[in-house]
Amino acid sequence: MTEQQWPVLTPFQCGVRGCCPRCGQGRLFDGFLKLKPRCEACGLDFSFADPADGPAFFVICFGCIPSVMFGLWLEMAFQAPYWVHLFTTLPVMLLTCIPPLRPLKGWLVASQYYYKAEEGRLIPVERSLEPAVKP
Ligand SMILES: [Zn+2]
Image 1 (tube, helix red, strand yellow):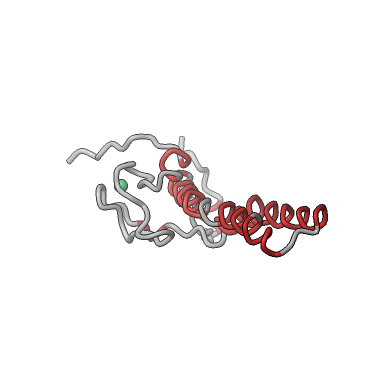
Image 2 (cartoon, protein in one colour):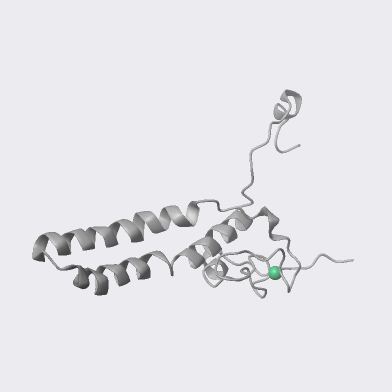
């Protein structure tokens, strides 16, 4: 049996689109942010995927904080009434915080697959002293 060849996909290519990081055909998400258990096209088990708080961290740093700064600037510069914030600051906050979550999560999951990132393991001392490449 020959081993299946998969296309080389960068994490950004497939992750942002929410596609399977191995085949690029199947979908990664079952809903908005919930991952499917496995790819429907190639069968890749998505249990390795655990981006944890990564997407939220990026959204907070690059979406939430700037939009809060915008709201504070609007308040300090114009002493805007609440209804102005309702129609400006709130939509800016929602648009900068919610839509980026899914592509960021897809990118992080695809990066985990691409770079084979996993939890660290302890290696016994005897094995750690062996040369990585045997002559
Ligand atoms: Zn797949």
